[in-house]
Amino acid sequence: MALSKLTFLTHLKTLTTPRYHRHPPPFITFRFLSFATPEEAAAERRRRKRRLRIEPPLSSLHRSQQPQQQLPPKPIQNPNAPKLPETLAAVSGNRLNLHNRILTLIRQNDLEEAALFTRHSVYSNCRPTIFTVNAVMTAQLRQSKYSDLLSLHRFITQAGVAPNVITYNLLFQTYLDCKKPDTALEHYKQFINDAPFNPSPTTYRILIKGLVDNGKLEKAMELKEEMLAKGLVADPVVYSYLMMGCVRNDDSDGVFRLYEELKEKLGGVVSDGVVYGSLIKGYFMKGMEEEAMSCYNEAVGENSSVKMSAVAYNNVLDALCKNGKFDEALKLFDRMIGEHNPPKRLAVNLGSFNVMADGYCAEGRFEEAIEVFRKMGEYRCSPDTLSFNNLIDQLCKNGMLGEA
Image 1 (cartoon, rainbow, N blue to C red):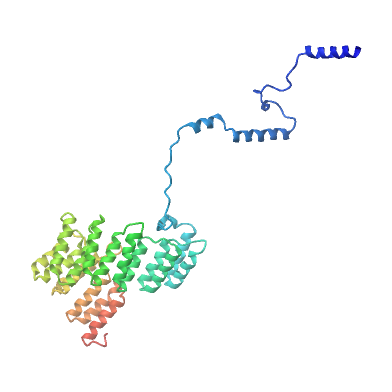
Image 2 (cartoon, helix red, strand yellow):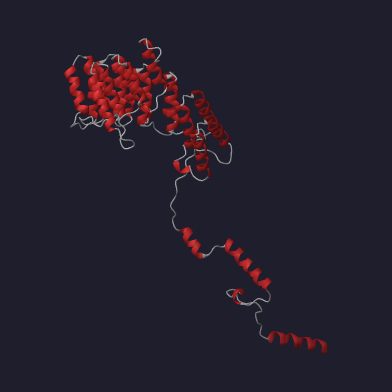
């Protein structure tokens, strides 16, 4: 009984004693309390980082609830689509150093090493740009190494080096120089259908001149219409090539028709003298000598506003020499030499001396033809194979075998 009473009193004391919470309320965090050891503090920091990853702060929740601008989905690129060529900005750093090394080989006339170096670099850590490849192909075209050029072009095509418009122009020029205009036109059609860029005015100059030289004047006329349909400005150089083709076909009406068309498209005035040589020939073909000389004065007269380049002068010289006006041609040639002041003014070139040599030979003045031929070096003009062959042929035909 005594034991039971003691137990009862103990229980009663426990009930009357107030209870205290041993744990802090939920709004009190442990951040404000100190930690016994650095390990506990580090553990608390890790716990808070985990909580932030699971429950982001309210500020980020507000930002996520704001309406966001929906970006359009990226279009799916066709893996078979042609690649865009690199821009000039790609020629920098090690690739610029590679470009300069290959240019040095070209200047040293070591084209085989330049082409080989370019091929090896394609699969190296420093891949050459299309500008480097074009430099090698241009040097090969200049020296008529057509097979090497086509071989290098096939190699870069298989290696995935994206060509630009200059690459296509070099390819067109190669096939046209090799007397393969149909092959050049096939590549042109492929270029129009597949290339991610448009042809340049130089593209049409190369194609139209090559087609005229290969006797395909009608196709050249079609390309001229295509050029105008693409929105390109009427090019006097292109029209001059077509007018030359009409002269070769004895089509004087075609010469005047092209000139009037060009004049209309340029606003009634043709200030480029490159077309006047063919125009003068057209007048001579019709027997209109006065109109031909009037056109000559309009082109090279003292008060003329026509811009005459070396090529334009050469066309006029050729028209005078082949139509009995050799004395006028001599006066014009002397004037051209007087105006020649490189690099500011280039009034004569290799073609000027070739035309005058032919003119002297046509007049039977072969000694003077040889003399004017030897004057080329004084005006920084070097005769090419065609120049030598032409003069040698003229001398041989007139019994001057020793001079030839």
